[in-house]
Length: 430
Image (cartoon, rainbow, N blue to C red; front, side, top):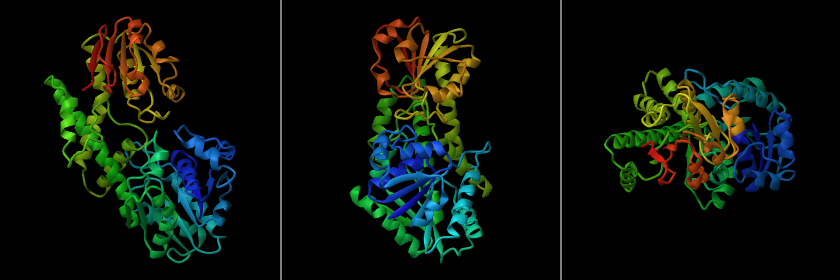
């Protein structure tokens, strides 16, 4: 099939390359000429394991990029993969999505034959039906349900494993309003489902598909916060929280995934999605108190690291190494990284901060241009009075003699990956 993807960001580039990998002809439409040139040259515009290889493999063949919306006229379906950032009150900002929908609508006015427009971005329930569809109709002059249809296909991609997540999904969710749209969506995803060995395919309504994404992320975020709450209680009683949570995870009703206690969740999805569904619920007259509590627990976790540090040293004037700046390993994304509130708190306490991350230093430099950045974990630790481990990169688990170069070896481990050893004062967060 011929597919157009509007947006060449983290989601758009990944799904475009993966759709090409399963046999579709794909065109990425983006307003950024540098990104378009990068894709056409075979270079992925974002850091994501496995993506460079796919873009290089299919660029110039089944994958191309352009700034011209007219490219969608030669495609069967268009996926809207545009940003929906958070506003200060938790609501999502739909301005970029709305602009994209208007551009698609104006282009579809010249389309011969039926077309399907699918929301791929994460949007609150009713957005596709009540915001995107009217814009498409108004701009195109076409009739919804006759000349074109809308659909919703939520993404469940984790940064650092997005390619493998798309090509080997736990489930595929296809939201549609008409039989015709449902059939076309099946045709789009059949090659992927076959390649992936037949994961469950959930065919549902458009707003149900929108809600499934939010419910999915809200549940996972809440599970992490509950694990952290329980681990915090364990620490107060001197109990090994890992043993407790490992045992809890053996219950088939609970499972072990997302029970790893630590400094909390960040990134582009969990914080934004939980805030958005809480705000949407409030608009509908419902207070999502459990989700609000999950956010509160998560916000406390980085500050707990500083509290633990204070038990061993005064951060004022201390040289503190922050190991890990990305919100998770395998990505250079620092959006809502737990390192950000931690560094803020350290600076407020008068600490001299040095940060290190294998790939995310330049992105974090935009947030904190005035702190020091090291070229390696060893350089960050040299002369430091304390080290706070925020991201569980494998290289941090391998640290050993590097701690000997610290002035006062106090290590607060927010991910429980550093091995206890003689010569350091070691505290896990939980």
